[in-house]
Image 1 (cartoon, rainbow over the protein chains, first blue to last red):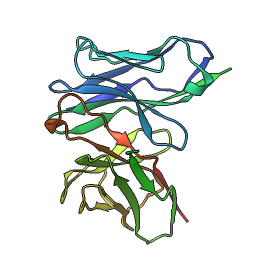
Image 2 (cartoon, chains in turn yellow, cyan):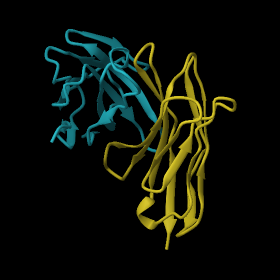
Image 3 (tube, rainbow over the protein chains, first blue to last red):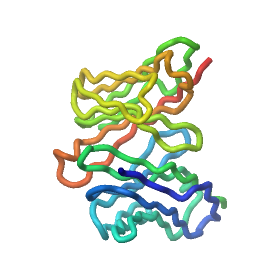
Length: 112
Length: 117
């Protein structure tokens, strides 16, 4: 079946530190992969996406590369800011069934 | 602007009552979804609908009901049979990927927080 596994948090970093949030997946076929961000009390917002192997999604300084050989889609940012504090969700889309599968989320806190 | 509107933002329920959470979208999306989010946890799928007048149970459908009479609307009823309804409920929509070219992400509303009095 399909599933997504994220590194557990919470993660606390100092401003300007390097961020990596690991995400691996299990899927049949060729899923699309996504990172979503959730700020306190709000819904999820799409951060970036990738549709096929070796695609790199990027947005607001965040990047993630679709690695089929390692079934991974790790989120990275070179220099985090306090405003990046949020919960980050990795997700995959099963094109065959039009369903989405989410990881459990990783809480990030950036301190000044 | 197109988007998904969930209402109300906060909702309170007495024991034994049914309550209905509203979700409306003007994105012309075919598929709509309801998720439940508990503190410190991920999203769990309650119900989803890929087309009007049709819907399927997700992983935790017990104690919930839905309807899809219109493409734009997918209300969720939390019935008295749901023993632990306190949670944050998220509605989402997407274009049916089987009809689309390329990947199509889900779009989310801002959520409804349900609490029991």
